[in-house]
Image: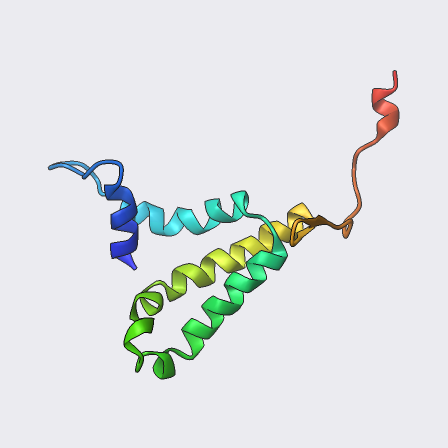
Length: 113
């Protein structure tokens, strides 16, 4: 999984001598920041399901050579799906359809003055 993050960091600039490699921090922060941008619990559930299958059926899927790149990213995809479902519930979005699960705190009478 580190190679994927390192590759995405290297698109901008290589870390030189004495600098901290930002790929380590990106492993932790990218799934949550992705979910803030992609907050939809319908699409997040798809990512979560794919990550769940990759994590829990790894022994069966590792026999296929084509699945090896995906298996290296399995926890990353799992975390992206989990956080997208979480933020999608906060945003009340399901496949880009807004829901009103938790109601609103907006009071239009405050703005009519």
